[in-house]
Length: 219
Image (cartoon, rainbow, N blue to C red; front, side):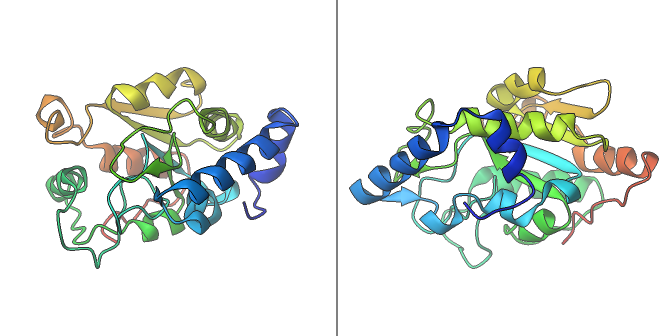
């Protein structure tokens, strides 16, 4: 993990033995099979989006378990990947279009660089074994990241899609921040409350009202 402004608060909140255990888990799992994202991209979300620049937090479950898709950012996958497009990102693009944003590709790196923390609750996954690393090591760290963002003085928007992410609402100060909850954008649930929820325009309205710059969701 590269040193960022998330590092000090994480180390002050987590037990001293957490990080050696985390490194041991990473070494063992990546040595033992095909794991995604690539090892040097595990912490890409917090490396691209410093705490001081974080304005929006979108919480995902875990990385895409298919080869070539996961890139360390929730819901994002490389624009060059054209086969078997994940339906969640397709539905996200549809909702963006309805809100007046035209996001043509699936790579959300530019969102991360604008202050959108694209955080999976579980940071690694074995090939073709979705959520297999849940409960192994990652939740203490990612829960603390959410709490750190919540404790920060600057108002933020937390976007929680689906039952898994919505459980994280209890970690967030709803009096200070905007919490947007809706159905998951997957094809199994998008029609049950994701479409029409307008998270992107609502997030921008809140940011502008709190004196911050809106996100260009089209980038």
